[in-house]
Amino acid sequence: MLRDDINNAVKEAMKAKDERKLSTLRMVNSTIKNADIDARGQGKPPLSDADLLGVLQKMIKQRQESVELYDKGGRAELAAQEREEIAVISAYLPKQMSDDEVKAAIAAIIGETGAAGIKDMGKVIGALKAKYAGQMDFGKASGLVKAALTG
Image 1 (cartoon, rainbow, N blue to C red):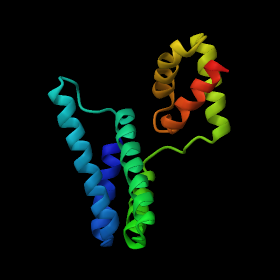
Image 2 (image 1 turned 135 degrees about the horizontal axis):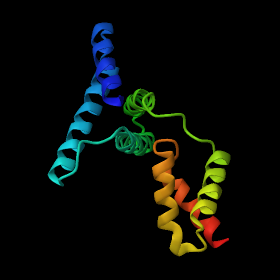
Image 3 (image 1 turned 60 degrees about the horizontal axis):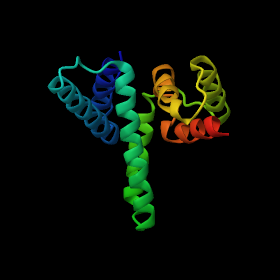
């Protein structure tokens, strides 16, 4: 489904002559194809939509890091270009959970898995990734999980 949405958006961007969106979507398609090739090399099937959400989140994170560097370096035009790419890619992610929703989800997963200490952190993060792929920043979530399991 997600692949079809992106391919349709490429066609629409071509018709609308929206160069920024077109180049960003082509880059997304290229990254997805590379990820599929990597998966195939490891004997895995093509990526599912949940896996693709992870790929898109990684792309957004890379661009956010670039924006910070460009802002520090005084390159406002390059930072703006990265922000535009983030906006295009973000359109294909589900709505991001708020901090309160993330905390509630973590508490629910801890209850479901019966996690008792920091040794169960991997189990909790795995369950969160399975249930909430693409809906939260797992870098921030892991800190919250750690705090919940130690505190």
